[in-house]
Length: 632
Image (tube, rainbow, N blue to C red; front, top):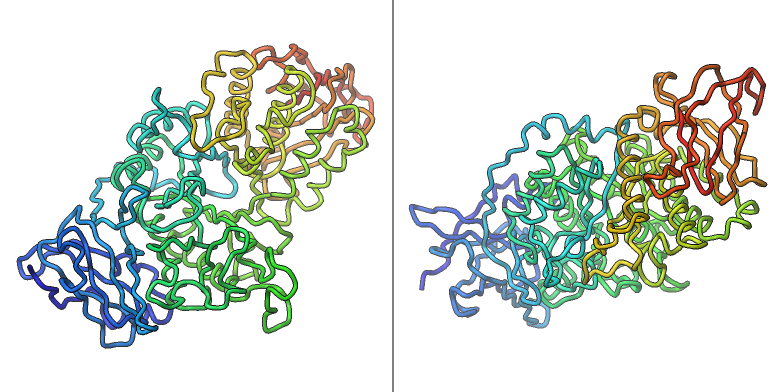
């Protein structure tokens, strides 16, 4: 059996960068790499294990024998073990067998930098080189414009394993999704798709949020090349791809990152900073240089190697606060005596700066952050965390809380809707109706609405119309767009058969038309993060539960006037103040019969000289029951 041949892909400069936490392309060096050395094909292996006494590569090529292929430790105190094994090639299955200086503890670990992992519940790594010829050069050339903060940004959030399944309840592959999902997202008019984590994860009920293979798309749906094919297919159809990314915690599975070399290598050694009581998982040590380099390299890997257009960063709040989900005595204040995790904040800023520098503003990072932490989407140079956008969780909770109320009581709670405008422009907000809102007994969106079937669906259309005309970018979890009635279940397909019914098909058509209107209306996106892009006409009509407002872009000719009626009572001859005279055209009405409505539309609207709402002109319109009217 061939022995390990000393070899390295690292230069002295690489090692200095790694030790300083500034090597952001570690995936080019660490892990397994198929190479040719002195005319012999084989695989170079490199792993970081500074507390190790010995490190062996064990696999199907050496009968999992720890004595067969022992790696060599570098002489530079980097803690990296490496070597070349001849004749080990693509498809070889392997792990690292590590003997620790710490009490001679033995661990057997998957490769943190593996490009492919075995299909769970198997846990080994696979030597792989995902050679792929990209066909998305046109998209990559102009995606900076598509991803700009002043562009329409409507995201369809997808859990790959349960979007659609075949007749035998088998999941669709990456290649099948490249045909079916891409054509659906394009038909619906979304600008972006967002995948819940595709990185390898051992436990299906975690939905992918407990990662063990940070550099490997899950093998549940195919190979790395096939996932690239899926991303490429979206790009060729002018659709951006966002990945959920989880730098906040990782599971304690025996083959994962935890206690990697018999020491707390990736996780913080203090359980008050290194253990998540909510998720029973481990927290990265953000103050350790090599761990920061690992995480930033991982973010850049997906953006670089997989042409991904954005990362939605999960559970940011849990990273920012030392006392997150902890009682008194379970956490230790920082050097200033408060609860902010200074090391995590520093890491996040460094991450966002490097992403922007490497991709010159052509990609976005989006924070799922649920607190009032200031400056999440402010640039780092101005004291912010540097994200492009932040999920507007307060808006989501207040809005859904309002909509679940019977309309007769809504007049007492109008502030639930109008309050969002007091802080709407403090961050670059994305409005999310995410997967978290349709699980754990919360019910589907349509079943959270009050009333009979007609009212439920009218409410749902009104909810989406209000969402698309509210300042901010948009995100909708799969199934919401056609009024999925059951709660989301990761083990089953969405209920596509519901589209045979008019109420479901009507909601789907309405969302399709909302996406088309959003993309074609500069008033809805050019100033979506600026107070100049929004003006109330009247937010005080509590008795009728009506809101009226204007959305504005750079050109006043494109302004849109919106009226929302949150009760099932038709508001006929409803007068609205207008800033100027002229004709208005109704461009969208959620009560149109084609959406399942009653047909209370406004064919002709002309301003009169009657002053109203502080304006010199006004119009009279019909606002349909539980409906939204959008006029230009």
